[in-house]
Length: 437
Length: 116
Image 1 (cartoon, chains in turn cyan, orange):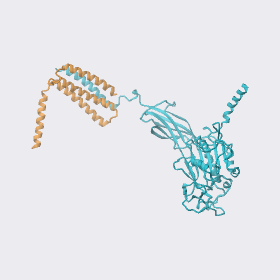
Image 2 (tube, rainbow over the protein chains, first blue to last red; image 1 turned 30 degrees about the horizontal axis):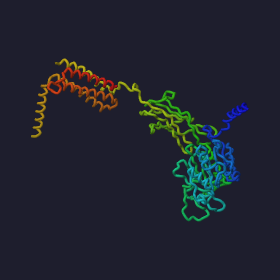
Image 3 (cartoon, one colour; image 1 turned 120 degrees about the vertical axis):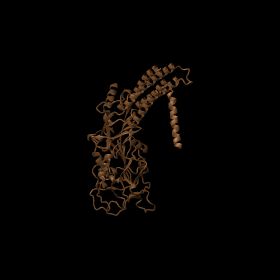
Image 4 (cartoon, rainbow over the protein chains, first blue to last red; image 1 turned 60 degrees about the horizontal axis):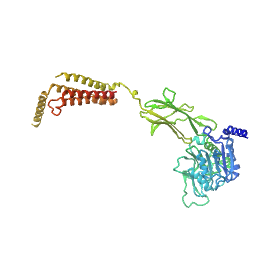
């Protein structure tokens, strides 16, 4: 019996690292994704999107949103790295999942995709509100645009929008330009102005407004113009990423395959931009792009290699750090010319832009200021779409030792001369005074 | 009229001061010369500092203060050895000179420490 127990423990300890191949700083890409659906029809109607995720190596776990067995964590460990909420009409999640559970899932650094719809439930709206966006409160409202709608056979009510107001960020939307407009049919949201972490990725045209398409406009719509965001992303301070959209159908096979012609535009695109847009932005959300890490922070005096325990004022030093970007499979050197280091004590005394060698090594050299105290080397790098880097390393700076000061300064020779001449004067005067009687 | 009379007054004042000073004993005149030398050296250093800048400020301070200190101590000695000064008639000139030497030793010790 005891022997069996030992074998069991040994087996567990060997297997444990393989069982826990979840989100880690070394491989930031998500692996296990929980997809919550309103009904399993979405699984087939949105299969192109799900297949593109599967082909990139994600393990999708499809569950109904009201399944009583769903759980995000077990024994304090999260079972998933990311969560996709394709369940706009769910009133209550099944199992142990609830609003607070989803928020703490994000708070612990996991990613989230929320797709709402015209009949979005209060629960989905609350999740979105907690993420910093507010869907239009009118439950029957949809985004209507009479100038940049997608042309279709029937005139329609112009709720199928051809959106092309993309955010200008290669890291979020990929380096390949999205030429065709993105089809969008759903509700709009506005960004919480107090939240500076949320970004508008696809914004509505200035002529768009949010209202009930079936009734006549009696009062001015509450959401109008470019204030309406169709798709937004959030990157939290812990680098968790969230995608929020008011249209679940923009991920559907129908929209992926459909051609698009924007009203007033002569070009008819064979294929809408939805597939490219959804794929590229899911790469961003699932940390296949724009995830930085900084390693090997080093500093030393010029001409030395050892890192000293403290510096003296006016020392010349060299600082270097290596920054890499996760490409989805490996860490690639990150190349930018705007990484800065601060030599900081209450405020930055030195602010230097680091130069890089195109292989990820960023370095600079500077002179320690003529102020002593406890300083920090700080790198605070926050760039649109990239995870934020925040490094700080403490280092004390001491004044000169008493024997390190300059001696016999030429400019001070007159003062030395005066002091010695006073001594000589005192000596001579003493004699003269004593013997002059 | 007024101007010439005032300049005449000044001349008379200067003349009387000079004749009064001529009656001063020689040992006091030597002390005055010594004080003048110290003050002159201090002034030279102040002018030099104004031109060159205050960089080795401790050296400047010690240079000037050694001159000022010397001048002050010499004036103290002069007061005590002056026969006409009745206030210090109890103190022997030898005792006054010993005080002067001791104070000078302390002053120059401090100046040496502060100079470099």
